[in-house]
Image (cartoon, rainbow, N blue to C red; front, side, top):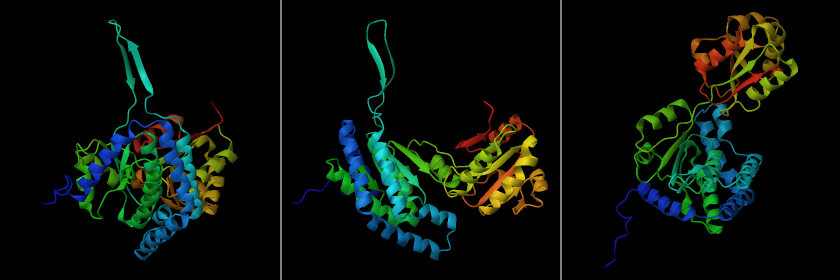
Length: 360
């Protein structure tokens, strides 16, 4: 008579979580060298198997185009050989970081002579729920391995082919380096049931981290029984101060908005001090026009748009809270630094803000 495995009566998600817990226990005590070797093996494998990854990604991109997906989302979804090489370089950068495990945060000697220390230790099993950014698959796995954790990855169905190929490469590299391959797993299933089960896997999963838009983050924060580290959406601001270098300000604005508008740290709102607006805005609006950016402008910015090449529309209240992830930016003139700070405090998602000034 064949005995049952302890996993036989579990759902696929629960089985994956149990395997992650076993892998996490093996990884937690490993020395830095073992973890770094696995990370370097991952970086090498990504480069060697780039064609396999890009071919799988092309399937996702083709489906996205057939579904009429917007170009900003397709850009986030797309992997090219250059992007895969950049992801591999990022993994090597993670390997070069100091090992956080075992770091003494603070401590003291108690009056009775006992040495008390607060020391960083791995969390255990980290669940990552994210949208159509296959680079997150590798980023999350690398950071979790570096910190001695196992990771359960749940990307969006739109990137399923890409994520499947990437995790296959990651698991082969991790296992080949002598670590348990189950330290990196995709959450089984394509429907919402798998996500819901992951969110309720308290006791199996130690923490969940959602990465994506406001709706995804809100769903995980409000519906999870597993502890959640809440991340923010990227409603990011660039404030151009009265004391500024105009060339620098234009360069920073265009770089932060148009270099890659689909990423979460791209600028979504431009604020300009009134004392510099007449000199700066015509140049900035022309530069934004050349970059293909539509400006959602308040009344004071609209007044400076005449005679420029800019595509300008009147801003609504909704524009100040919008993460466009596209070639769009909201723009306003403010009376002072304090007014700029007040606007940012009201509308910012707390992700990334910039001030362009020559004054300390």
